[in-house]
Length: 198
Image 1: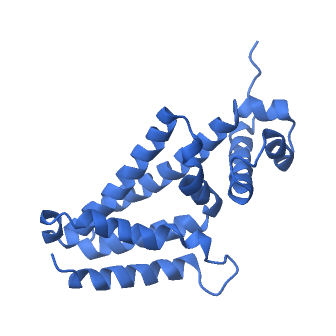
Image 2: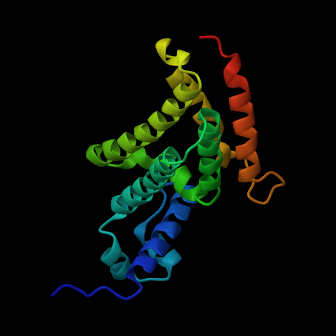
């Protein structure tokens, strides 16, 4: 007989994912055991397996969940009535704000997806590509001429280079916040984009 779900099942599941992401980010995926995850969550190992079948399942849910939230953010901005520049700025600012609350998940996404089986890895990478494409589309909307010279994708990757690796140096307790940095990146990128020669 299947074990019934507890009333706080979803809440406990999210708690486990958050703690596992923190452990993976701090110790590395390979250096973290399910025993450590269970201990960090304050549950027994059998309880942990009630929520997730194995460590790879945890990794998949952390990475896929983070990308899904980013994809939803990008899609939400598409529904707003914004000028091309305001659309791109809003996407940058909202992504940086999202990164602020998901530093562990973002590190796991950028560093540990390679440990997933091929099918699951392709699933996450495909979602990442959709997110990148949404930014490339926003850049083309602002500078349509860049697409003809195939410069919109390299510029998109340059933008992600500014955004994606802030977790490696930006201190959560420092004077510079993710929101302030989001404004700065938007100013820098949108201010410099008109100068790019197609």
